[in-house]
Image 1 (cartoon, rainbow, N blue to C red):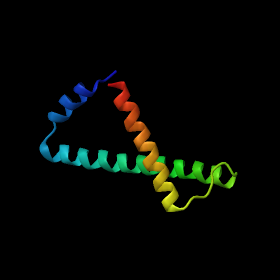
Image 2 (cartoon, one colour; image 1 turned 90 degrees about the horizontal axis):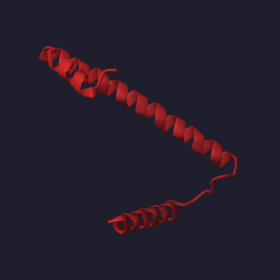
Image 3 (cartoon, helix red, strand yellow; image 1 turned 60 degrees about the vertical axis):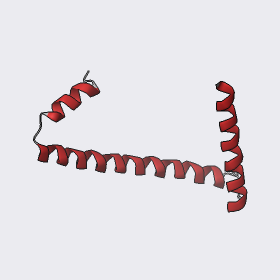
Image 4 (spheres, helix red, strand yellow; image 1 turned 120 degrees about the vertical axis):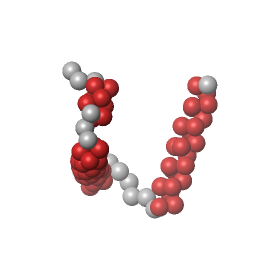
Length: 81
């Protein structure tokens, strides 16, 4: 199995122009994969919503809920210290 360190060493042996091309290719593939993940998550959320497992919320309600979750998460991290 190839390690990340081995891959990096191999890439460093490439000419600068090829390293730039590789960086562009990797970035494009990363973006495409991330888009697929987001689309899949959105599809699941739509199915849950249509199935009545998620409730409709206003933006104000959603932001308040997110703030509460973030505060709870921050509090639990402080407890871990």
